[in-house]
Length: 128
Image (cartoon, rainbow, N blue to C red; front, top):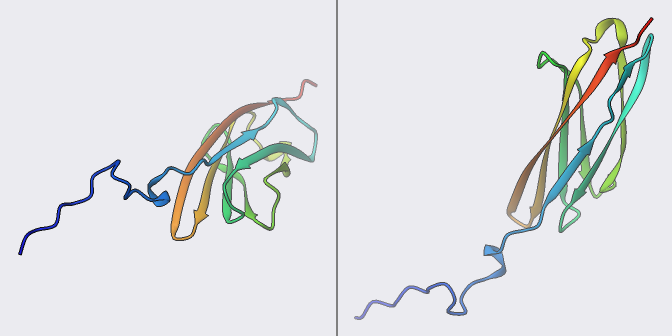
């Protein structure tokens, strides 16, 4: 018996499963001021994925690293872009730099592609 040679790249045996999948995401939040009382604030998200099977898990942390909000978007139930709102109360919120972190996972059959997205913005205490 003779051993069979292993396939090499470029010999026509490559499949689409080895090609990278284009997956990207963005988060965008404006700088602003903390408003008196408990108010709604907003940020935008957008994902670019090859299929309708995806998740985007988003967390919001204050300058101390304390979580102040978390949300998840799921394809195909949620749009690939939109604006999400969250509520903060000025008396319970530390002003300063906030961090939005998103983990986007796109599923293509049995393959999953993960992309992490980060956005920073500031909320300052309102001048009295």
